[in-house]
Image 1 (tube, helix red, strand yellow):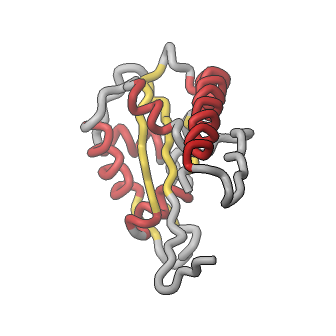
Image 2 (image 1 turned 120 degrees about the vertical axis):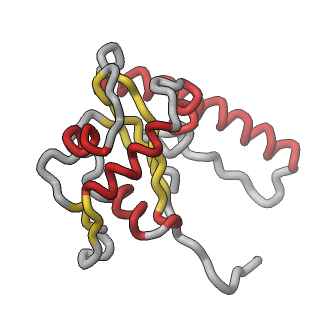
Length: 168
């Protein structure tokens, strides 16, 4: 048995697929009005004495939006690569399983996982009203510091149609 010593990371990240009104122009003000109409600050849920202004969050989100094309299916597919509800578990295999067999098992699981992601997306994209919305993808991870941890676990997209996908 191998044992790891030293620093072990337990970081997480999440992607969010967020619906904005068709033709939405991302400025600090429009993002503030849309995402944070009644929120002055985002509190880091793991360090409640640490908070960030909604304006700071709006600026950060604006920069990410300006670097994207809305409704980019490639970005959406990347976001769907995380852990989705009811996703098939990765199959167990023993130490005696050959490398060839492990590759087959992994490939079969990945095919099943991708099929599940497509089904999950078909069922859940309705919540985003894609015919009347522009969809943007955001990634936040606590390995990038307290600010992104607050965005990942805080109320960043609670006021608008959005889907969160865990990438732990």
